[in-house]
Image (cartoon, rainbow, N blue to C red):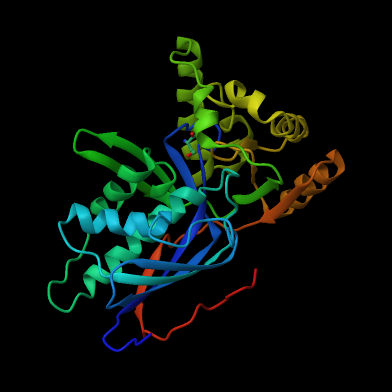
Length: 321
Ligand code: HSE
């Protein structure tokens, strides 16, 4: 296919862990582990997606792909015609495990659209941070995964009358994430269906205190992480969908580790107060049994990035982990 006149962008989008214990639908953390994509425009309308890594052979490779639909959503909201695009993606974020894969796919599509719109030779448009968060949240339904995927670091996300909003915070350098990823998946929709319509007043107050404390623990006082990661609003209600996760979280917390369900699960996030603690937590998980892959990760501080590249650019790490 001729690429003369084509424009291309390269996008990197991080994995995320939402909730972080008490911050249900509000707090999220970006992780230095992500997907990389290149999108190249073409003369013909339509879209193709070539995937290596996670999702290869399993997720759609045509216009029904979530990345393509998300880019198309941005163009539609702006009343602009989306050019035909060929996307090449190398995915690392596990699907259905609570590491924000659908939010990251949505953010990837939004960033592809943002990059192509900004480099449009006839009518360039620069999208604001609020635009990016708004479009991504329209697709995801809640902003707590897409905010850290877009902006990096620790994010507090909320919904104002004007739309979703966020505040990004820098995480204390001692905070050291470990994610334990199981083989099995849990759908977010199923996990959400287990939530009650109402919660006891004292549980709401309990989570208010812990999520407030968690901001201090993550930004200033990692020694408070254990107490600050207690939750009464979602994890117990969802435990029947992931008993193995419930059991390992209990084992880790009994040993003093600040373990929580990552997002809607079933992965577990340990927010260690120092890097060495992560090895002890990973050893404990291995001794507990089950098939948990430990990912020792840094906090991502950049969030999603997009850059214009030559139309014949290639992924920096195709087919590798
Ligand atoms: N806050 C969301 C939930 C994260 O726990 O359902 C997963 O999308």
